[in-house]
Length: 551
Image 1: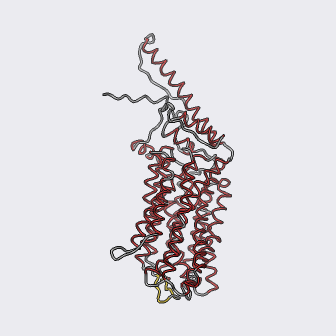
Image 2: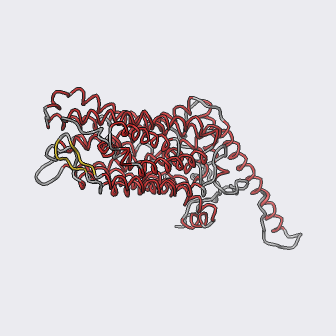
Image 3: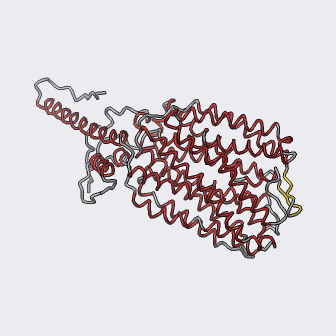
């Protein structure tokens, strides 16, 4: 679309008018040249074949989600160990302690997503990439060596360091998602992003496997209810999260800045074009610090511009749709995954005759749920995300979760009254995990990273993801009302009526997610520029004027 300029009207033969006309011709010519360079470079990115560079991006981003999942979901088993050590040998922490341990990471994640989402747009995706892993590394190490004393309670110390770890985990969400989406070719963007997110499933599995190995190696001591052994075990399980964190920190230094940030936010088209050529051909990047930078005249981020963009109902309803969809999903995802021990005890898979049997069965049960539902769900999404689209998968996931939770809530008593019916409950529970991941857990991660202009993409992604963590915080408060008290090592009493009601509420929340999906556009096989809902034809209008400093 051609931009019409309106120079000052002077008489036709005026030399001033001729100069102005010549000036605008040069501006139009330069604008056309810059827009063509930008368009050609972005077309190269969008139409590129899968390469080793794309594989490296997926590995670097994916290892972050492996770490995130390991750190977040290992607490399902670790909380039981903490209770043995710091709650007089009971198999569960009291409701306040359990809430503090499980709510700390979502609160930190909420803060980190908002903070790093904004920083990713201000300072760049690459500059912030690695900072969040450093925070995770520090927080994880501090948890593993945390102690207690007369003036400080270890549960509150762990709350603090899990909150710090959560800030780093929160920062990983917008940065990894945006970097992957902005480098990915259009035709496989969904698969590349889903394979990054699928590492979350392997992180969950790794937490269960590490716990199982540590518990099995300490069988004799655990059968004797040895507090010292349990205290060592939970520190080992948590502390091993530092190993992949250190690896990820090194790997993230090798990722270049995305061309869309360089073009649209730094407004340095020439450098972005060079970067595209470098990483698509050689898989490397080079930035000459002495190169002359020519900033272009393009839209800049500002509060007024942000408000104007979202004053358009199409953009605002999209934001509402993705925010609520992620909130609804996380209510269920974190409600179930962080409280597997409560659900498993409700169907008598957790408690046993001694500490070893209890911890061993909890680890095995977590592995069954992850292998039977979560991991298959991630990979079915990977296979179909670029074929059938994002919205059909999200609709299907929310619908099936609604149906499953209605069944589990209405038939709760007959499903938990004996061992035979409990197997059916476990199958339904695994199916719920499957349709979370072959459904909104994957799509809510992908869709926000494909929408909105580059100058706001990371900021808005942080806002959307933070809405999800708000849901996670709320559901932990809800689960804290489910009383799990131990009268002996072999008999944990769960308030079944409250758990039944919570599952019923989850069904209502999942049903509302179906409605919010309607507000979201389909993003499959569309470029990020098309999905930004902005005119791209004359995105750049010449070179930016140099700033004059008056002394």
